[in-house]
Amino acid sequence: MHSYPFCWRSETPLLYRAVPSWFVAVEKIKDQLLENNKQTTWVPDYVKEKRFHNWLENARDWAISRSRFWGTPLPVWVSDDGEEKVVVGSIEKLEELSGVKVTDLHRHNIDHITIPSGRGPNYGVLRRVDDVFDCWFESGSMPYAYIHYPFENKKLFENNFPGHFVAEGLDQTRGWFYTLMVLSTALFGKPAFRNLICNGLVLAEDGKKMSKRLKNYPPPMEVVDNYGADALRLYLINSPVVRAEPMRFKKDGVYGVVKDVFLPWYNAYRFLVQNTQRLEAEGLSPFRPIDRSILQTSTNVLDQWINSACESLVQFVQQEMDAYRLYTVVPFLLKFIDNLTNIYVRFNRKRLKGRTGEEDCRMALSTLYHVLLTTCKAMSPFTPFFVEVLYQNLRNVLDAGAEESIHYCSFPEVGGKREQRIEQSVTRMMTVIDFARNIRERNNKPLKTPLREMVVVHPDADFLEDITGKLLEYVTEELNVRSLVACNDPLKYASLRAEPDFR
Image 1 (cartoon, rainbow, N blue to C red):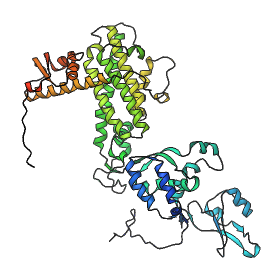
Image 2 (image 1 turned 120 degrees about the horizontal axis):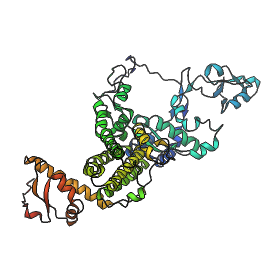
Image 3 (image 1 turned 30 degrees about the vertical axis):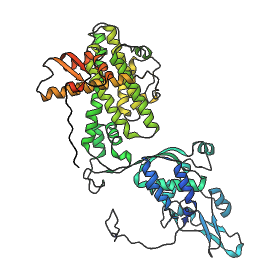
Image 4 (image 1 turned 180 degrees about the vertical axis):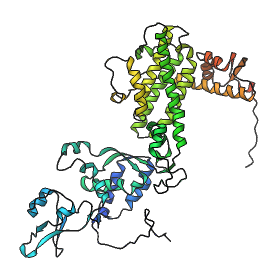
């Protein structure tokens, strides 16, 4: 049993009846369609390998004609007895066959045009069929129609086809993606695109489809005005919708992006600006960032770590963008911003505020400056407005030849030094700090209460070396302990017990 179809606008029953149609013989090229589909890359790939593959495998001939007035007229002229058919390929050809000057291809301007029969005057004339094209035929012709190929721009088309990238919703596996593939395969024997991102449907908060009639969604411009277009963009990129899954849109989610990403990011930038201005207020020379090649030689472990982490961010964004995986970028950025504000800035406050000497202060400020600038460049495709605001101030201390906009800058190259061991060491340090904070909390020992000793137990000697080496002062200061003892024998502080599993 199938429910009876109703018009989604008027909610009135729909009446179906069989009518004569013109078809594209899709079944004849089915094998080629399946082969061309293998040459494309989809994100997520299961849509290509299952949903779209199955649709192509069961493809039927495509009815391309519609009985309407407005639309692109089918360029088919037929004799009264149906024996003679002419498909006209251009305005020039139509003018040649009919002897009529053609200036407009809409129905009311060409329906009256007739073509003399090629069999002689006794057979009358050929008249255009009444139908117009299915609008999906026009959409599927986009890669070449938009530049008026083959009548113009032949080189431009041939050098750029198939297109590098298209994106649309999951429902277009039976719509645009399908018509693109059918027409390009029939005409050129190749797919119309190389890479495709398939997104899911954005639903209302109640899980229903967004509807102007139901008004079950917040006004888009209200969301943009309240939280910014960049926050909305990041919210959607970080949602299931870019993995071809449905999502329920919530304004609170957009606010969460502002709170978790943009505010900490801006606070790190503001802290930099405040401390560069402090240099001048103290009568010292204005801030000019130290060259990156010199910063790479810094002996401070946190400078080495944040420089390496920044290189990892650039490499990761580049790698994921090359693979069209947008949804992995935001979680990585979130972690990086959290590390920048809660580790580098927090643990380096004394250096950044100049309490360890001017030279060390300028080294720390320059490191923070270059990390923020590189982060802005790497994130410019995702947060174009926010990074432009930051860049317009950051560029004031660059050389005179600096680009006017961050969007004129090249994407940062991975060329700096990556210290994976240092990145791992800082991750281990934060693990110890988080565990120690939890233990303090469970035992009602606030951080302001100093402790005489803390014991770190781990069987890995490298782990203990990381904690008791260059990072020791950060651990003891952050946790307010006087000494730290390393132990590589877990059984000294813990016992093992075995329990049988009777299942």
